[in-house]
Amino acid sequence: MTNIFDLANDILKSADIVEVVSHYIKLEKRGKNYEALCPFHDDKKLGNFYVSQEKGIFKCFACNSGGNAITFVQKYNNCSFVEAVKKVAEIIGYRDERLQDIIQEKKIDPKIQAIYDCLNDIANFYETSLFQSEESHEALEYLHNRGLSDDVIKYFRIGYAQLKGENVINFLLKKGYSLQTISDAGILNLSQTPYRDINSGRIAFSISDKDNNIVGFSCRKFREFDDSNAKYINTSSTKLFNKSNILFNFYNASLESKKVGYVYILEGFMDVIACYRVGIKSAIGLMGTALTKENIQLLRYLKCDVRLCLDLDEPGQMNTLKIADLLDASGIKYQIVNNEVDFKVKDSDEILKNYGEEKLREYLTRLVNKGEYLINYYTKNSSFDTLEHKKEFLRKMIPFLASLNDPLDFEEYINKVNLKTGFSKDIIKTYVKKYIKKNKEVKESEEIELEINEHELLSRNKVVSRLNLAEMQIIRYMLENKDAVKIYQERLGYFVEPSYRNIASTIEEFIVHQGDQTDYNVQNIVTYLSNDDCKINNKDKVIDDISGVLINTYLLPPYSEEEMLGILETINVEKASRRLKQDLDASSKGASELEKAELAKAALVRKTSLIQDLDKKRR
Image 1: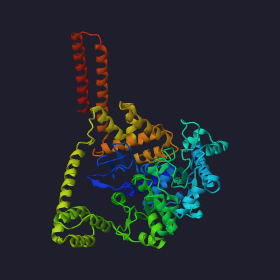
Image 2: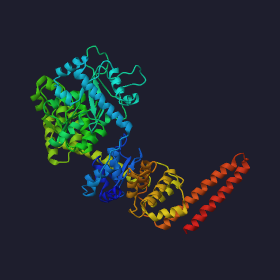
Image 3: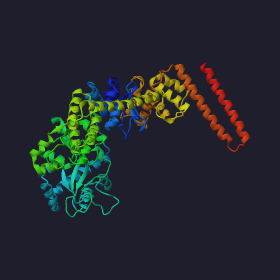
């Protein structure tokens, strides 16, 4: 039987955390470390999230996330320890027969499984209702009029929520589901009686996650007498349904993308279905939101080229540019369906309806890169009839020109801008150089500021007491040196800072549990905590705190035992000083001003004596 802990540690010895993290997000080298926008919270600027190549750990000082390469993959993919170990091995190209022996049993909470089962039964009820209920002929006729055959309807699991909303509720209750489970599935509001389906009277599109489990529904109104405002209503956020985590038709498209090597991103369900109808099965749809970091993660999972095909109206084109920027930052290869068209309709579904299959296929295969798309977009909105219009076009294109690293690409687009504006190539290049120089000066000033911060030891604009700093130094030493743990136990025994006490007790438990079976180092301690079988309380927080200590103290040189003993004495003096203050505060209650002064004088004498004793020991 493979020891997953030993395998994980062997993989970590070969892993470069920068390579692993760069597989998911874009890193920038800053000083000794790397920076990025933190993927674990809504990070707006650099300076929170650090990766230390030397230490093999990452840390965000805003949301407190931290850990090693395996921990990062666990958190980013929201997966098990075993799955993360396999993924890190895949990223770094690590080959080991033991990887084949790992069997991951997916443990699902029975309550969550009940919700999955309930959602599947709801989908079956809706699908059956569409083809068999007496009232569904209007819904089916509507779909047929939109060009959807019965086979297409069944492929996308489209159904109908009956007007009599209690029917599906009674059906589910008879199958043994509780009202709470039905509510958790998202079709029932327990505060409103009589109980009925909130989707009633609508066409229901089943929404699945990346593993093809139904997690919710998007339901469309279609009747003339339906006076509800929203064209679509989505399942509200539930334990399983979160719009930011989902792309419509992702599972089906993921299977097809492995064959064809690309995937289309479109805006609406009907656009995805239109692609399917003309033979393009690798297409996914946004869930009415901007592309999220979770969506980016799903696209990485596909490992194929992305083809952007959003609506041709102004909002769709603006969204295309935003998504293109996100894909640039994420390092995902993409092309854009050409926005220079000879028709007026705005999306794939309308192209198919108005011009037929051949026209849609032709449109979808006319691909351009970001530069061509930008030129088309800015040209469409510029008349070029005045000098100011030409200058405005140039200003908009300069950031793109400055981003080009390939000299051939740069020359090509300089020529294109020259032809559009009439400005000489030399003038255009001069403006681009000025833009690059200005950005470089800003970046260099940031790096200078960073270097200054690095020499402040703690660069988080956080006031750290003498005691806290000393305790942090001891923790760092304990994480790197097993002998330091024994010295800590004999000379100190406990830390004042609770997070350091938790780290210390974790280290002690690691030594007891692992004994001499495992090399003693911080990577193995973090891996021990990351393992799903580890039962230590708040282990994720302990990992985060360990990472914070390592990042905060990475500039410190290795300690000798003598230096560590000196720091321990500093801690003991600080602890004694705190006790003196507590005693003084307690003794001063109810005392006269003269008595308070005498007590303070005695405390000062005692503290001075403690510091003198410490100085003598150091000499």
